[in-house]
Amino acid sequence: MFDRVGSIIRKTLVLLLVLICDVIISQAQTDSSDVESVSAPYSDKIVTWYDSSLQTAIASYNYSNTWDFDGDAKNDSLVFVGTGGAHAFYFLRIVLTSDNRLHEFSFIEIDMPYISALTDLKREGDNPAIQFVVHDFDADGIDEIYLNCCGPGSLIPEQLKKMGITSSRILIDCSPGKLVIKNFEN
Image (cartoon, rainbow, N blue to C red; front, side, top):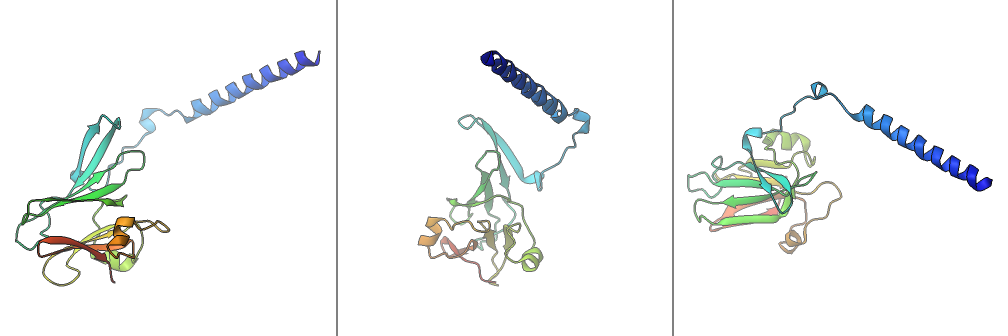
């Protein structure tokens, strides 16, 4: 008799659980008229393609032909390439017009490749929301790239440590013939 009562209780609990899930799901569904369209920051810079191996769309931010990093009076190519996924990160690719070579920094990632102003960086300091600024920080007449490549508590990538980098706040500077990564000094 107790087995029969236990079976009825189990079946009742399962039915109750199914009903609760059904109510939750029906409440979570929404009419498409309730959904607002939100555009991504700097959407004019976004390039997307489908990656069949990851089975997802990949977005990149293309800031090419905007700045001259090597001082040859020709604007260079700068692209943040997305890694895909629900929370994508972006790594940096630069092609300088002076050497026409791809400089890929796949070990440096940021999650918000949106250009910020120098005034934002000065006001906010090391706020992780300010991740990308282009400015002539060393007053040599050529712009450098500021990146805050790690959020608070994140580890500095090993490749950066091997270069003597001790901070997640870095500058990428073009010295004759190469791009140099160095610690950002306020």
